Length: 227
Image (cartoon, rainbow, N blue to C red; front, side):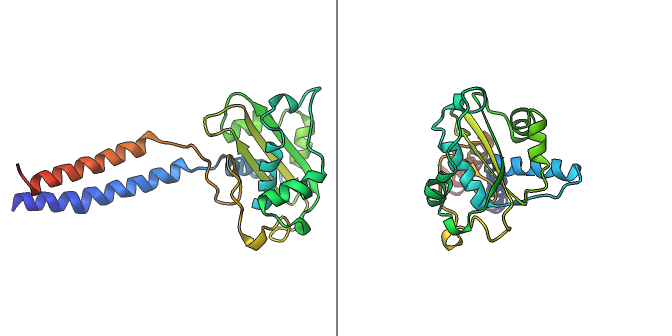
């Protein structure tokens, strides 16, 4: 009787608890730094008495393509050797790669781009890498913007790390629209507004939960089938 009670306890209490913990851990693991970057931008804008911006996933996907155009060349970002992709690439390459309808593209009213070999979290990337001078503040607080999209690459354990933010004066929910209304996968990297998951994230606490589950099952089996 005691063995049956312990078996039921393990199966009906420990197992659900371990699975719930795994679920919570998964939410933690899949946090998107691009979403956090947009959150930092909007928090700073509202603190400055400016309106928050619509997080447009189509525009954010273009930001990811904008990063990829640099092909990992951190030296081409900023400084005397700075380069930037031609505007024609938005319609000819970036939009098709994202599945964004070219007819819904709107004007880009500002952009931030940063790159370095050390990864930092979104708040630090915002304040230490993207906003460096008065020009950056002018772009951040511009009243011409209505939408924003952010992208991050290099979070899969590799370097260098790129952060990109694009601003637009388009109409929310109508500009930078995806074909069929569905975002197109564009790994590696991740972008804001699309419930996207950055690849390569792992959390040892999830492994610990699975060990707890395995141990529970083993103990339960031992009580059910004693040697």
